[in-house]
Amino acid sequence: MDFSIALALLKQGHSITREGWNGKGLSLHLQHPDAKSKMTLPYIYMECPVGSAYPNRVPWLASQTDLLANDWVVIAPAKAPQTAQEAPKRRGRPKGASKASKPAQRDPEAPHGRKADGTPRKPPGRRKVDAAGQDEPSPRQQPAEPPAQ
Image (cartoon, rainbow, N blue to C red; front, side, top):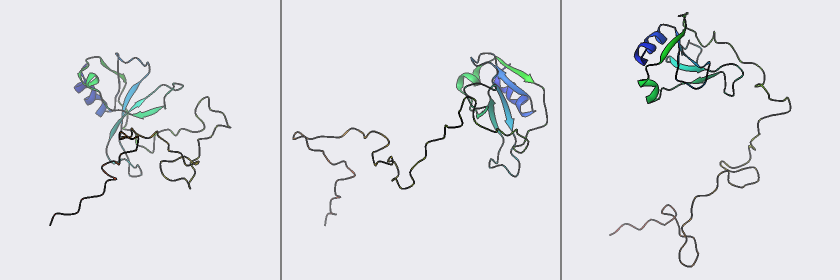
């Protein structure tokens, strides 16, 4: 079926997928936010199989290929719309993460865009150098000309 029919079925509560997707077990679902959700409008999310390299649920946005494909199929019957409150909670560490692994902590005293040791997080862009090897000031660094009188 084409995407317009698949979207209509998704709005009715069905789960859908594409036969042409490389990842097996991927499915699309429609989320209806409730009063406690930070989202205010319904949105589509992709559910990945448990144990895959990706998070279990991720936001989904259709590509042009997805919109024009005719290989959409329904994989689950309609059910009551799921609200954010009813969604199962993920608990614990991701699969394969050890107890000792912690996310890197950012030094609150470090200036924005710099590491704790003061070095920039990203390499600087290309510099313009004049014939003598001196840095040329960027247009932002050049002083503004005084207004003509």
